[in-house]
Length: 93
Length: 355
Image (tube, rainbow over all chains, first blue to last red; front, side):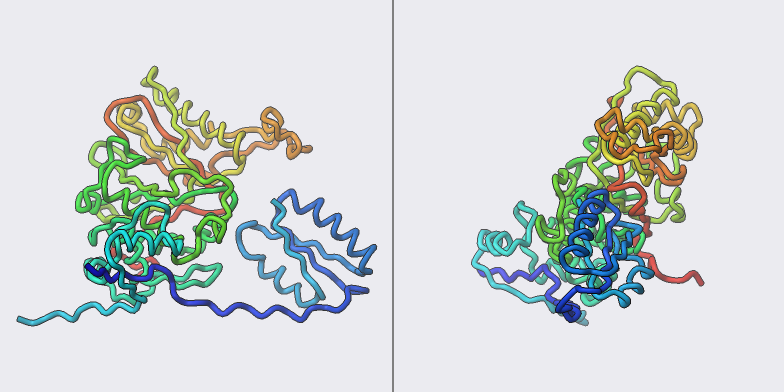
């Protein structure tokens, strides 16, 4: 006997955000690091900053930390992003 | 005789040969929790919606982080799959309304490596209507209603928010409560206020409380009738969780079965008295982390005191469990106070302004 059953998924796709234009170089640029607040982000971002400065010529690195590692970044942090040319958001578990 | 309008459903339909083919369809598409599901037919789904007087497109809410809408029809499909009867569906829908409150932080606790499940606590007259059992085996497969309702939440998380292992669910270990984690409070065999009343819901109303919760940690104290001594055992387990898992304060649930409940009640202790006692007793110095291998994060804050509860209001005291045995359970939060437990009345609008 044929059984007609229903799709349990949402069947909708939320439009994905568009990625920002990729910078062709980081020379002289400002890069933001957004930590989720976990311990593991500290050595990871420290090493990344060293490499960005030494190998890619990054001029400024701004560190910010979310107040809740499982929630979106605080609005004040999001507001700052427009002043940066690149952002690295790390999990750090 | 007047015919009522049939409920028109919008979901995509699939025709399968038989029950076994339905299982293969759902397992093959990753739409299950690994166990067989009840095939969600149009009539079974419509029956859930009609019982709750919900049109299929009723918006239960929107997940705040990923902005995913949750509709009554999709919840009903998942509830049927979990084994819910129509009378169970209002509990499922209300639990979801509570889970979608911003302070519950659904995305965080379902995506975290920490591996929590959603604990559901049912209060009020609906417990009797659905046949929930609050006594023997209260935290496990005690009855059809709580088993199916808890499972419905997990299946709907999988199918509506992609909370499947390796998808949004990044859990390292998880625990068996992720299949189903639902308990009804034993309101008739206690002098205490129901949890829902403690949380602000008027007495006599049915309600659900949801909490991002780790596995229950069982305690035993069959050797005292002194409330302080009994509760010291609970406090010790909460401190153990602070030392071994997370030191930070937040909602804890404790489940107190009859044998331990009665001497506490007989001594005149209320749920508030228990909460205030445990707020004082369940606390550790940060330096204790060095005793359990976590000295690296003590630093210069060894004398800082961390309470398991940020205030007595954080404690959810639940009367439930079989009649014999000096046992109890401490159910820790997913991660401190990052997510808050939420209580919602069944059949009431959780977002409506008071008139």
